[in-house]
Image 1: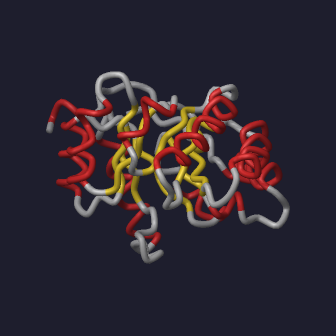
Image 2: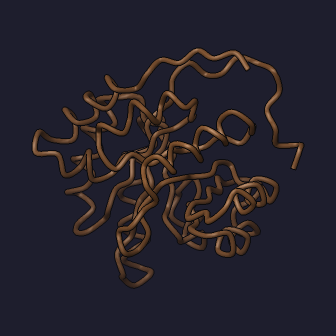
Length: 220
């Protein structure tokens, strides 16, 4: 896996935000919160988690949201539906688990973004990178809402960020986790409920998140 290891060059000084949003109702409602969040900070991508619905309904909803996200310069990613990416005008997909990721690669490459999460081991993370992952995500909750300890997430993100060229995303379950994750050298910090469930509103929450992004200038 040596081709994915970092060369000696400066790191990007600060990570960018990666928003995780749930499409639970009409897209217009989510669009309002997303617009406020995207305008408030440096957001690289929005991962859209889709409800159970027929394909036509999903495509209509995604097409309504894609331009609203992309006009802010953020990539629009679909969670687990690589088959809808091209038709919906999205920029790529995020897959959970190495098996799902490998199955999706032919549908996404070379023109679309392919991200991989739900990674169970260091070996699987390296395989994902070698297979063509544009990023790997560590620390997100599973389907039951469980995740590794935060210390374990920090260790995994720091290991990857120090050694490998493929970008990594560290998942912050709370705003307080953003600072420690950003200090590892991760290129992106994923935030979801801690933004969209914040009683202060998404705009204020994103500004708070931005304030917690540590500026780390590390020469490796």
